[in-house]
Picture 1 (cartoon, one colour):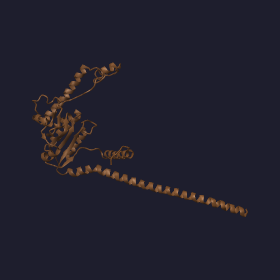
Picture 2 (cartoon, helix red, strand yellow):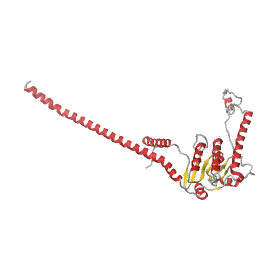
Picture 3 (cartoon, rainbow, N blue to C red):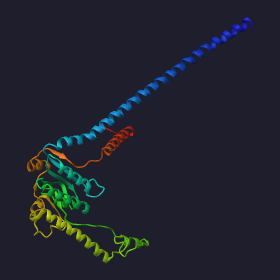
Picture 4 (cartoon, rainbow, N blue to C red):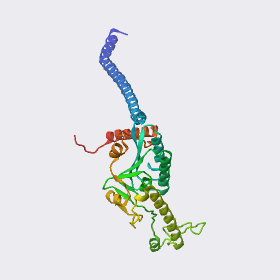
Length: 329
């Protein structure tokens, strides 16, 4: 290789040198940016893990707080409260098992000076109501010195009043709705509708009256009479329970007392359906004489409550993240 070739190679190397330096510098920047991004991702990962840990800790504390508070207060003098709210039925929050569990816990509490059934219900299952009614009477026999009062908020009708009638006294607001001492079973009839549409109803049964409430078949007079007798029997059980619980306080001379009508709290007082006016706080402080109130209504299990709260929180976070609705600041 002569001197000319050497000089030419040097010139080519000098031309490539800036390009190689730029590529190296770019590569270093990319690697540095990647490293920083990884470090940032790790920091955010640690942050979110700590955040979730704190969230779970706070959620557990919030869930456990009512239980610890109830345990600490149950030994001191207090008024026990059990809620009967909403439809009374198996599977609903106001079901016999739940209400009875609360009543038994309240009755067994050393510091409970009395029990208040906080009523706000339109009624529901006569069977579930009867279970609670009998449990109240059982507790009264076991602990006759422990008063049990029903305090009505907006409404206490039908199965709700069935339960309340077992209490020693019933307190209401003047505008509360009480009564509805009756039984109902409803359905629909679509016989004419399917006839007009040319629909043929095909139903097979083993038992002459098995399809007794079939809405697509004409009313069976015999079946209707039988169902009415069943309703009458349940109605009589309801009336007997109310009479047993309320006794001579009822205005038996009022013919419509057991007709299924509802009454205001003020009218109910005149009819002997209730005993006086007052809310939970008044009854606890003035009637029972223990102003501290402890709620014995059974709550959901620890994990069910925790899952519900976590689900609600995550749902809110998700909605906040993807929300496109306008907002005011």
